[in-house]
Image (tube, helix red, strand yellow):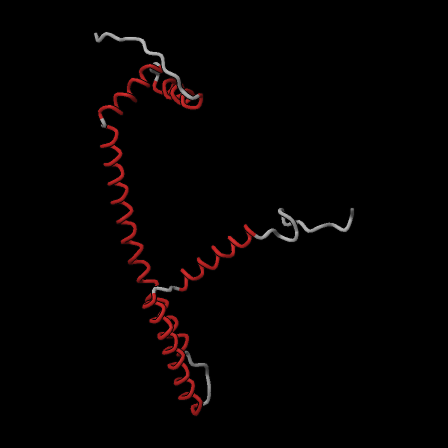
Length: 159
């Protein structure tokens, strides 16, 4: 049996409470919890386990992103087809107006594609623009106090 020597250490109250809870959960002494923690710290075993867990998590996230990328491609193609169909949709109209309506639909779709390609080329996407707008709005609200007060309640006429 290894010889054990006494050592007095000081912990912050919160950390000592966590040690006590862990010891109670595992049904071991506080000394055993501290000894395991120090041993793990000195041998670096925990670092390898954390690295392996991190690699597994990153791999999982990578697979999720690949699936989302495919879903987004499908969504984009679906939207483009819908927009094209909507812009080329013909309501019942006299035959002499159909050619003009078809030409207008094609013109609208061509403008839509021009804007879409420009946005894709500049990486200035519509959703990204909206997220920046929302962030700016929230920041503005956080900096500028509401005239109705912090809770949004208006001033009452009673006083």
